[in-house]
Image (cartoon, rainbow over all chains, first blue to last red; front, side, top):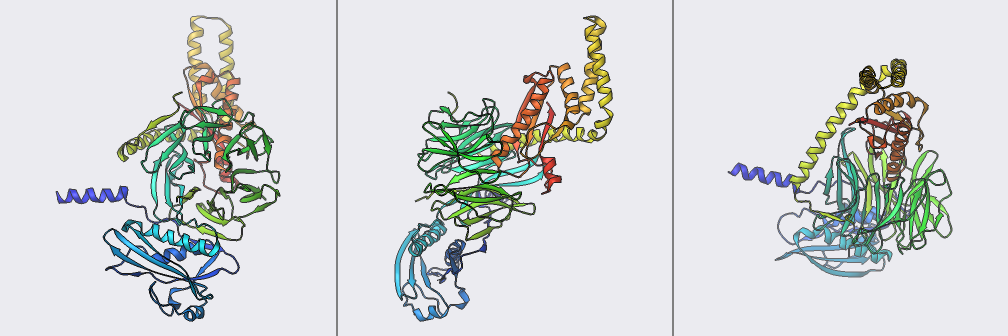
Amino acid sequence: MQRLIYWTWLLLVCVVGPVRAELVIEITRGVENPIKVAVVPFRFQGSGVLDVDLARLIESNLERTGQFQRVNRNSMLSLPGPNDQLFYRDWRAIDSEYTVVGEITPNENGYLVTFGLHDVLGQRELFAEKVPGPASALRDIGHYISDKIYESLTGIKGIFSTKLVYVTVDRRSEKDQTFRLILSDADGGRTRTIFESSEPILSPTWSPDGGRIAYMSFRGKRAGIYVQTLATGEVQKVTDFPGLNSAPSFSPDGRQLALTLSKDGNPEVYIANLRTGELQRMTDHFGIDTEPRWSPDGRSILFTSSRGGKPQLYQLNVSDREVKRVTFDGDYNSNGAFTPDGSAIVFVHRSNDRFHIARMDLKTRAMRILTETDLDESPSVAPNGTMVIYATSEGTRGLLGLVSTDGRVRVRLPSASEQVREPAWSPFMN
Amino acid sequence: MDVLKTIKMASFAAAFAVLAGCAGQVKEDVAVTDATAERAPETATATAAPTEAVSGAGSSQASQGASQSAVSGAEITRESLKASALAADTLFFFEFDKSDLRQDALDDLDAHAKYLVADRGARVRLEGHADERGTRAYNLALGERRANAVARYLVIQGVNRAQIETMSYGEERPLSLARDESGWGRNRRVELIYQ
């Protein structure tokens, strides 16, 4: 009996236990003079050792933006807590511009985390705050603190509390593969498999409220678009017509899905009403029309079309269905997405037979290539508009990369999985 | 419209059951394509002549009118056409971002077409694929165009559209993982699979 309990327990751990943190960060290029921040190890006022090192989590978060550089723990002359007096000259001596202090106190509901941010050169405390939370929410608190610090120092809302979804593939042979749809924190931590299939999973995308994921998958040999509610695991089938059912994109109000169907003989962009199921055909051309992506104001849809002979990006006016071409530079521009303010687009651009992520300002029409790896694809913009996450390759591996929307910062996200692809950045969750 | 259906993912157990089912099906496919792939090399040259001879005989028999011997002749023809079709290549390759059939595909496609015309009960699935270059959803559309190009050719040769099922895997099922033209060229393909 005891053995049975043991095996049941083991099975539960295998099935529902978290997959180990898959993504480890590596900055390949940062800004020239990053802000130096010292994050003092948070004091733990309980017994034992916590499994989350909050100070490490915070300094890694800040460093991943490329705008900050950590001050090595070993060089710190003292390790003050939030209630201790800070000797600013000690921090100036080790080149710290800002210093973060904190402590974690256990209480009956979990923990109370107290933290503060100090301006070393100005010799003053910028803010101090207490955050309560259950024991399971320590990582969330770490991301929250990172967001507070980032916003205080840059004036831009932080993205550390946001989430990612992406697809991984385990390939044993051409027809024996396991596809997984993975949900993780923005730093790659706390991964969770939310859907698994022996058939391909493609084009995951977030609803504007962050509560649902739309994606394409096969049931048997039939492709379909599905919407999965994260909190309940409930799955809604949107379409599974013969032919293509692909590339879903939520409207800004979350009530409609733009997608590609070829049920009328040719890949065309449609809008599906998620409540009534009603379909509206938006394009009509014998070329390939696909990869629709809604603009933030909901008035237009960016899509890829081969109507000019080669894949290029076009913009479709939702009210009158008028189409105008957006990209002219090069013979392959596809898979576009808007920045959150709608002023620019990022997309896949081919030049010299290599595929890179590029950004184009919609007003000036100036294009800039952001990445220099090869086979870069699936760009997805962070909700604060500062970074783009994308899929790239290295040898036969597929991995994720981050690049700032100005191209100045590049971060590589190596992973334990051989094939990581199609990342999608969540909206703000709070 | 019955488009919106809610599926409750009852449990992991159910999901695993479905996965197991799919895995079984996949195994069968592998066996079929492997068998034809092995035979493929010698067919390219060897079967072209016999196929023509057999089809010539078939049409002259048909023109002789409906007699007992013609019926059994048709039976024999169908069997030999089937043999030629099963010996013919089942992989058809394409250029980058193109869905036009290549000339070197036509002889083998003709062998499949002749059999499918002779046996209206026969069914094929055409799976379109793309190489990894370019974006995934676009490649899914490209794979479908390639499958449709093969389907259109078969229909022009007299095959009923109802005998053909098309689908696209885009770049999700590469035959080769080589990141150069040797791999990409093999991955830009349509696979013809008898059902």
